[in-house]
Length: 492
Image (cartoon, rainbow, N blue to C red; front, side, top):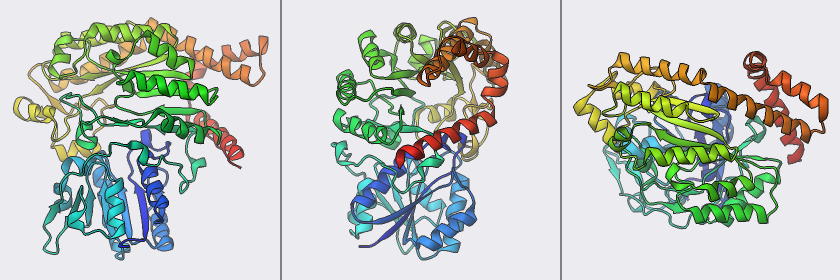
C-alpha cells in the first residue's frame, strides 16, 4: 500500500457552496472507506481557518492529501496547498476536479507542490494510486518525474456501470453543520456541444446513468435519517425519459412521502412533456430550472444550444400550469447577440409566472469554443488567470465584449434585466402565491389551521416583512438551527 491515510480537503469557493454536503468528496471518502483506506475530510467552505486545518493534519497524520478543485477561487486554494506543504512535508499532494481535468499538466507545471493530478473520473485513479500501482500504469494520472517534468498517463476509460461507485453517506462529515438539503447525481457526461460549457471537459461527452434502483436507494438512505429535500444536480436529468419514469416508480414503490425534489441545476426544455412533468410532480418534484440562455433563436443557434425558442416556451408554460416553482437561466452577451436579441430574452423572462429569473454574464472557460471565439473576435476584460479566479457570473462584471455588445452595454443589460424581473407583475404575483402556498402547507403539517393559519400567512407574505425580516441573515440562522436540531434528533 503506497498511501494508508488520506486527508480529503474540499476547496473554498463562495457562499453558494458553503452549506451543502460536498457530493464529489463524499464519494471519494466512501470509495476509500470501502477499500480499507483510512481517510478524513476537511471542508474549507465551513471552516477556512488554516490553524484548524493544521491541527487536523497534525492529529490525523496523512500520507496523502487531496483537494477537489473548480476553477473559481483557484489561487486561494493553491496557496492553501503551498502552506500545507510547508507545515507537513510527510504527505504527497494530489489535486482533482474540473480545474485539473480542463488544464491538466499546465496546473502541475505552475504549482510545484502538487505531486499528482487526477483527470476526469478520479475514483479508480485515486484508489490505484493508494494501493501502490506503478504510476505509469495508472490511467488518468498526472505525475511529476524527479527531473520536474510532468507526465500524463492518458485518459482512463469512463466508468460505464455507475452503480459500482458507492453513493456518499458522509460518514466522515459533521452533517449537522450543513443544510438539510442532499445532492443527488444520477448520471455523468454530456453529449451536447454548447460553445460556452466546460462540463464535457470535466466529465466527458459519453452519457451514462445510474440505475433507478440505485438512485432511490440513496434517497431512501438519507430519508431514513430525516432528510426530505433533495437536489438533482445532473446536467441531463431528463434526457432519458424512461429512466426518470423508473426513478419516479421506485420512489412511489418504496413509500417515500413528503419529499421536496428539485432539478435546480437546470434541465433541457426539449426533453420534457406534460406526462413526464405530471408524473414527476406526483412523487415530490416541486422545483425545476430551465437553461433558456436566450429568447433569440439566432443566438441559440450561435451558441449551439440545439433547442427552439417555441419548445422552451411550451415546456415552461406546462411546468407553471402544473404548479412547479420554476427558475429560468439566461446569458448576457453570447456571440452575435445584439441589444434587440437581449430584449427578446427579457420578454421571455417576464412572460410566465415563474419564481426566479437569473441573468448571468457569460464567462469564457479555457478550451471551450467560446474562449477561442473571444480570443479572435472580442476582447477580454481581464486576463483569463484573473477573471477565472475571482469572476462571478452573478455579478455585473462582464468578462469580455463583442462588436455587438460593448462592456458598457453588457452592464446596462444586466441592470435592465434585474429591474424588469423585479417589476414584472406576472412574476411578483406568482412569488406571492407560491410563498402563501408553501407557508400554508407547512403550518397545516404542524396542525395550525383555520383563522390562525390565515393570519400567519398574511404576516409572512407581507412584502416588506418577507424581504426585511423573514429572509434576513438572522432568520436564515434560526431556520438552520431548527433544521440541525431536527436532523440530530432523527440521527440518534
